Image (cartoon, rainbow, N blue to C red; front, side, top):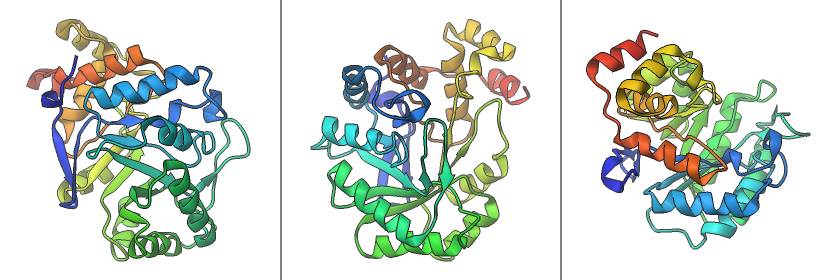
Length: 282
């Protein structure tokens, strides 16, 4: 089992230091990231166990449920451990299971922030992220709203999600950016340029779907390395992410304590240089 000592750390804009293996709270909701979890008690056990295992960075969003993930987090973990950084997001709305629509209007983002503050039971959100640029709203208007919320003391750090390098640069002209959360995994490296820019700048890169939406065990090279490491393909996939970049902060999510413990054990794996190169070339 992973311990605090197994988890490397990263400091966000010189303010908050977190362990580099976090927890994504999207899956403590119902099917299609919609509604209540099928096993609410297990969802709460997962959150408590994550903290016990040294997780001090939990990522959620008002769109998860919607509102369900944030509410369960507040109900389960408040009052929060002093070291715990909870990140949430705004900028997507939901009409039903599996449906996601961007809404980056300043009025919506403000309303969403107030709702997140209430559900998470905090006066200030540790890391607030724009969930996705809205093509119907000027990007600078959306980011500018987060900057205003920061000046008003309602959020501490500002992050982005699903952005390009150009959008990152545009946002940084408005407000300091602490993190970028883009889709990324061993089998999906479309955001490599964004990762490289984050590494150059020392910004956290938070890969969503870090296990390729559960498809990691289908890659033969992962199975090969997993056999050599006496680990699971999912653990190897997480270990590769952690060794691929010092600013990588994977946030694998699950609704199962057993799966959580399996994911956290990945922090103990030390892939050889040859294994890292083999996986990187896949």
